[in-house]
Amino acid sequence: MADITVDARNLQCPMPVLKLSQAVTGADSGQTVELIATDRGALSDIPAWSKDTGNPLKEQFEQDNEYHFVVVKA
Amino acid sequence: MTATDHQTEPATEETAPEKEKMVIIAASGDLDKAWPVLILATTGAAYGMDVTVFFTFWGLGILKKEDAGLTGDDWRQKMLSMFHNSSASGLGLSKLHFAGMGPAMMRGLAEDHNVASVQELLDMAIDLGVNLWPCQMTMDLMGLKDEHLIDGLSAPVGAGSAISLMKQATISLFI
Image (tube, rainbow over all chains, first blue to last red; front, side, top):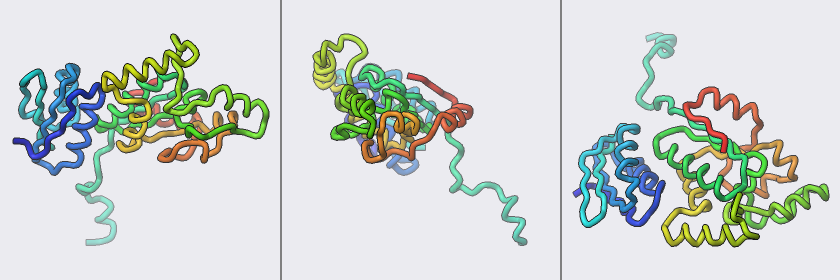
């Protein structure tokens, strides 16, 4: 279970990235943030965001047509 | 330790590393241009970039208050503001406008598909710390004063400031 959960289901680009970014900005270093999204673009956008901002993507999986991303705040 | 030692000390942890810069010139007041401007600006900010949007000419309409009304002292400025009375929530489309039916349909579609509106993205941009620069020359040309524009903007600037920033920017776009 992540420290913070962000529900971005049914939101379109660029909202999942924006919501995740806001949550990670507000988190403490080492905390985990889980993003749940249904936007297919997130499959590419979130890993790219994680790489570019240096907040590692710890876990990524699909469940019931929803995409889950667990990011660790750097 | 002498006073001069302080000057050669390495940067403290409080000094944040210089962020990469992104500059967008928003020159159009069309809905289909304002959308990508704000999507890219907010996403750039989410990517940890230092984002500035310079709003010039029709692009300035995006920043106008809904109730800005007739602006300027000159009859030509007043006419301009009458025929181009747009704000973030009232922008038109560059094509398929059909006297306002196009934008209304597009907004309805965006709502049905949970696409954030230009107004929402503009609020988000301000929240994410995107630097919104109105063009002073256009404001003078169109008779716009600070009070005709929304809150949360930086002080108006000129082309020189935009060029100066674009010289250092990793990403510069004209939309």
